[in-house]
Image (cartoon, rainbow, N blue to C red; front, side, top):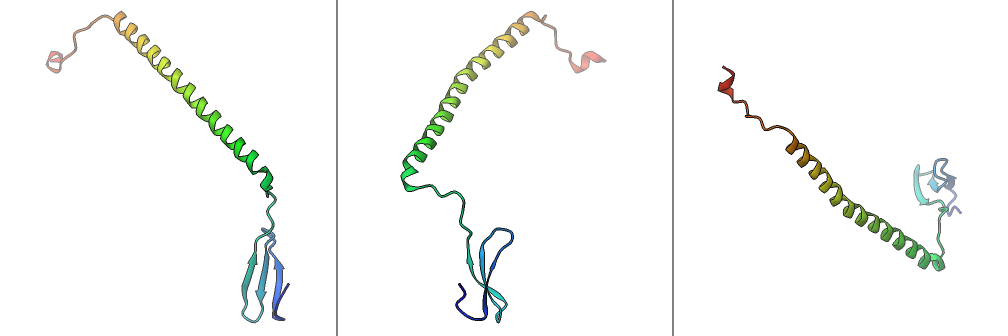
Length: 100
């Protein structure tokens, strides 16, 4: 609550914070954050940390699998390009003075 007669408590319409305004000074002298909706209990901390660790491990395993298959995909593309290059006839390169 207000401590002085010139101080008034107001609620911020945007965020719901409590503002204490000194009418004589015309300034905000105190700001209190609104209570946040998410407040995990201390007893849930172990579970939350375990969930986050499991999520990180799953993401890591997914990236490992993608890297394993990435090499196979690159090898396959290389083989396709090599076969295509073997099938094309070898042509003599065109030189600038040959065009005259």
